[in-house]
Length: 271
Image (tube, rainbow, N blue to C red; front, top):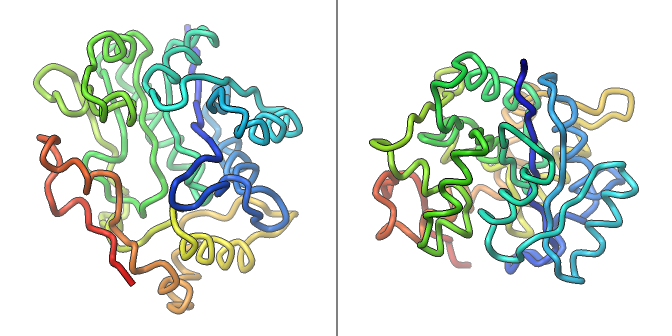
């Protein structure tokens, strides 16, 4: 019997650096709608749910999900580990897939590849991702784990970063948990040089330019290879947010993380 897989997309409007980023327009639709369009294009069977907060400020997220026909769970505003577990329990999921909403260029085939790596070894793995170490362009994040393993983290995790970022309790303990990583099949590592995620106005300018160039209603899903070919031909677009390439949340917790090195993050460049 195939496991029931739940893909959970965490989304909120309260970004400190770019408030309302999930609702910014991309090719005529909110960023979150474009992102979900790409997630839905993955071929592996799963149930999809957006998980947002109980704050009234996230009512627009709930309204958008209703319009899109995507179920939306409202949970803890800051404890993402709790939000994921409660949403997965409500869905009676066997397997949880964590995908952040700030990845509007995520390639559906990347989701399938990470899920295939997990499903190919039933009962053998506690956590599979493409982030440890990362090789894909930043913004193709996929993490997969059985719900009982995530529930174990939920019961035992105490550090604030473990609650806020959902999965560090697992991948920070390679001696305790059976981990696997999916590397980019190209053999390249663009994780610190190509930024497809969104935290800053420059990221939005980059994403809007890519969507303007590549999105077509009759062909809404354009693959990673097409994006990279476009960027190769248009370095001025790559330059829009190049100053933030490699900037991620690790930079604020290097003193706490045992499996992350300084080479896997970068500080913000002040203007």
